Image (tube, rainbow, N blue to C red; front, side, top):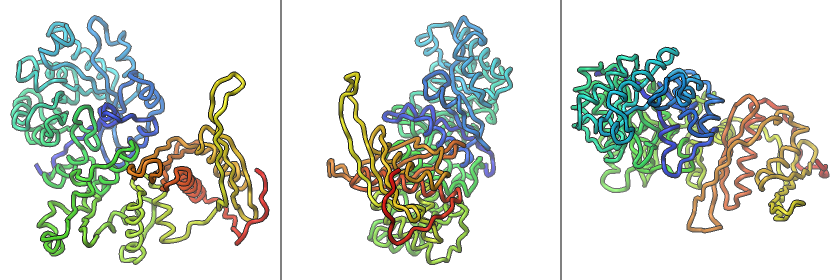
Length: 543
């Protein structure tokens, strides 16, 4: 088995969107798709074209992927229509993706009760849809819905459905445990029997986690011969979720010796990817998540600690640094340096691992995260912190004061509106500039006033905009006085995006901190001319 290739198909952007409480924005989808592409995932499913405005907008502005195949998801054509005259199939073709995955029934019971068509008609629509996809030059995948239940009820018909898709040209036949009720022994047996009809090199597995066996079932399918796994980041998905690719990747590579599109260096980004997705969705990361959770390699003071310090392998099944995590001994915090060094390489900083400043920065990051900062989802703020610790980041401007006013009123048409007005005083070079701006909410007004004050001195800020704004309450027991974390995503006209973070009991102060980092990061990367700040500013100019 060592070295055999396993292909990974990520369905986070579609299956993950079915998670209760998860609602992807188009910027979320772009950021996650690019992160998965960089990680080395083979296929990234963008969603279902035509299903909702978010997916339509995403496919209309599809991400440019360098490694992964971009895929669209849909269903088989409707009975009584040709593929050319089926709007849903047309939407799939119009998405212009390299791959198309269609879902179709592979259960005789489901065909009769859910579709209300004959068994022969179902086989025909599966084959016709796959054939139409192949004729367009796209790679076709067939997601065989309810396959395992269908196989237990009528193995001959379930096999007939997937064989029809394979014979029609599907590159991958994906066996789906739709209700998540199948256990590993049955998965291994059934997949093994299917390999006598369809080669394992063309078989995939798509499991749900309703018995907490999605990862185990995926590994059982691989053991039986399947060579593709469908899953999501952090196991997102409807009901109890899908197979968790974050847990599957190290199990496949480190435990079983398989090869994937992810390199060993890529594995070190697993915790970062996991946290990034949670932070974008404003979800609290699971502390006990396998491999990447804060508690995954945590050891509390007592009998284990001395043993761990002498030989970590006694209580740790892998070196935590292999997946971007760190050992955490409660009484004496350790590790973390390799994570920081890896992040340095990402931003182009070459630093001697023995440099004492690295250890100091590790402690600085730990203290900041203890206070509520989250740098896995705010790479720009982390970069500024790192560069300030190791070199110099210019101070392009300095905020002296800001004031926010909110007014709730009726407009000329007697419609109720709330208007925010921000006033800022900002030192730039020898000048102290005062600027006023209105906005749709206090943060929008503050952003407008700040950039209005800076624009004459820094044309590099033209064209940037805020594309996402997230707030998380960090101390809910404090009620309205709780500490809040603000994450702001900014973008420029070229599509470059960066995320910054701020933390404060005052949500406006936290927002300003994130805004300040955003503008500073932009000016630094654009190599803006540095306007030295004097010890004291001159009289304020109105902007």
